[in-house]
Image 1 (cartoon, rainbow, N blue to C red):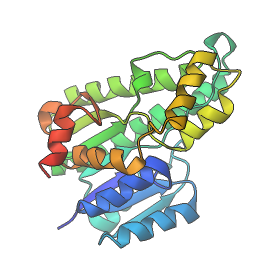
Image 2 (image 1 turned 90 degrees about the vertical axis):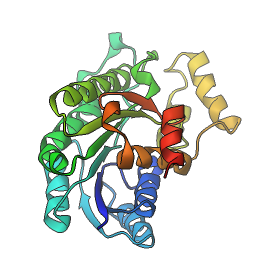
Image 3 (image 1 turned 135 degrees about the vertical axis):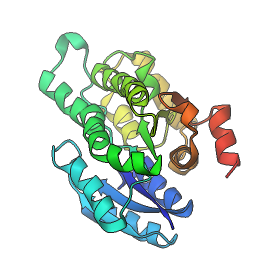
Image 4 (image 1 turned 60 degrees about the vertical axis):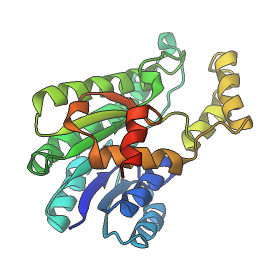
Length: 255
């Protein structure tokens, strides 16, 4: 029997790569994103790898989307073995002194509160399967970047959430995952909207990642991420792990 993965932010970038890689690694999938056409394309690529798929189209920031995602997994497949909260947004880019609290609240709704709703909905099923939840975080969770306050604090809270749930749920392995600097739409947004907002040196740094070919391809990060979702040991629960650290690469190599 194939295992079942529920995945947010699945229509593009890292999420799309995770979906296809998870299908290759033996998962059936329940996929969520707002863009139905692109989500259908990802689902077709997953089916080509032998996976069954179900789609839940909607904004993960909406209160009813996360429960619908987990409900679809249970109704169609009868189980949830893994959850990956990949959906994320960077804006607003602004100093805290100029913060638009409404924009901050939307950022947290996607990056953090959606994770809380997903876990609330999924934990009963994850307990049954001794399953895993992977919360896609960021280096910005531990390295403060000026003007990234909403994003960085939300990701830091996500890391702490993983630790809290690990302490509360001994039957579930919960991991915060740092994907590194990946060639995604978020990086394109930093290049196009960061000038004049971010400190010049920080904006130049992110431009250089792109100009010098140092952005990681989504597929290269998807492989270790799915390995963590498939096989992270319980001893990792509550940890913040990086895609390229030795223990993650060893897990990937072990198959």
